[in-house]
Image (cartoon, rainbow, N blue to C red; front, side):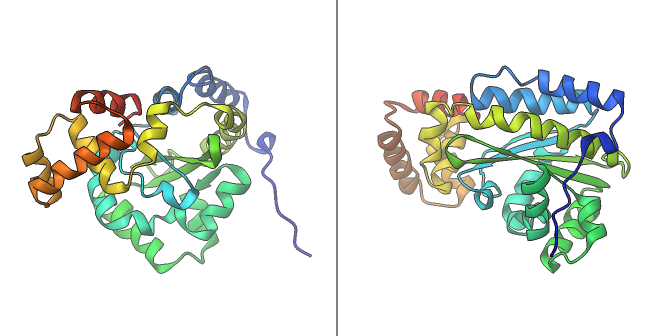
Length: 259
C-alpha cells in the first residue's frame, strides 16, 4: 500500500521564513473582494519575496484557469502573456498531472521538484525549455493554488531569472501561506462584476478588455481580426448579458472585476 507524503512546514522553515509568511498573509488577509485580494496578494508576494514576476489567474475549474483572458500580471509576466495565451497555455507545466497532484496536496508546485521527479509530458517539457528557459530565461518558477467561492480556482505564478530565488525555503514558505489563505479565499465573496464577466465567453471577455482599454469598434476589429459589424454585435450582446447601459458602464464593470 502506498502512502501520501504530506509536507511539514517545520521541517525546513526558520524564523525569518515564518516572519515573511506572516507579512505576505497580512498584505491580503483583510481584502473584502476577489479583485482587492488578488492585488494585495500579488503586491505582497513581490515585496516580501523580492520577486518581480508574478501573475494571478482564475477560472471556474482548475483546467479553465489557464484560459483566463484577463489575469493580473506584473513584471515580465505582462510581456510573456500574449505569447503564452497564443501558444503555450494548453501546455503549461503547472497544468500537467504531476503538478496538479502537488497543487492539490500542498497548495504549491515547484518547477525544480517537477523536473527532479521526471515523467513530465513532452509538451510540458517544451513549455519549460522553449518558453520559460529559452525565450524568457526564467531559471526558477512555482505556482500556488487557492480555492475560491463557488468551486472556482486561483493559480498564482511566480517566476525568477535567478535559479536559486525560488529554493526550498521559499517553496516551504509559499506552502505555509497557501495553507493559511485557503480558508480565507473559500469565503471571499466574488463581486457581482466578477460574476457577470465570468459568465461571458472567452472571446466576449477579450472584447470587454479592449472596451475597458478605450478601444473603438474599428480598432477592436483590427486587433481581433474580425469584422467591425461582428464587434458591434459582440458589444450589444455583452451589454445585454451584463445589464450595462453603455460602453462606459461596461468599462467600469470590467475594471471593478480586475480586468
